[in-house]
Image (cartoon, rainbow, N blue to C red):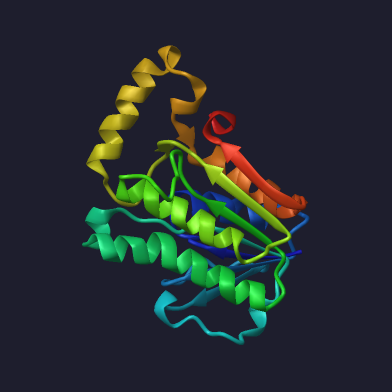
Amino acid sequence: MKVILAGATGLVGSHVLKLALASPEVDKVIALARHPLPAHPKLLCVQLDYETLPENAEWWHADAVICTLGTTIRKAGSSQAFERVDHDYPLMVAEHARRAGVGTYVLNSALGADPQSKFLYNRTKGRVEQDLRALGFGSLTIARPGLIGGARNEFRLGERVAAVLLKVTAPLLPRRLRVNPAENIARELITAALNREPGEHIIQSESMV
């Protein structure tokens, strides 16, 4: 099985990459990245700029796509740049893959995703989910984690504070509001890609605690 992974260097994506490379069911991982990745016999690291995705590359012909692309408004620099990364790039990858015949797409979205939300983050996540549905994938899986737990390469003060508070109050919170460890999310994403169940499937945050 051949899997395309967009977002391989992020917190969740790095766990997906590790699981995919270790899986006996995966023969090849095509990791779309801006920077080189450590060599592995099953890994093809395609260094690219998402603004100029190649349309006819042979590696688009895969069995499934897993997308874990995501940023913050602060890191992106503006709301428009944030939407470019969290909406446009995942959709562009999906469109290229669909034209190449890929039938399975797995997206790491977010709790509260809603195209009608007043909040930019939730609205953007909801919009990309909505637009992906229109592409006609035979198997579409959307994971909606809450706060993601794990060690990031970048410091996010808001997430760090929230993680501490949620950890302390976890016994009092419903499961859907608890921290979702990155490795748990990654496990659900890779399982969905491997199973390729027909139809649309939503993985809620409470199943990734």
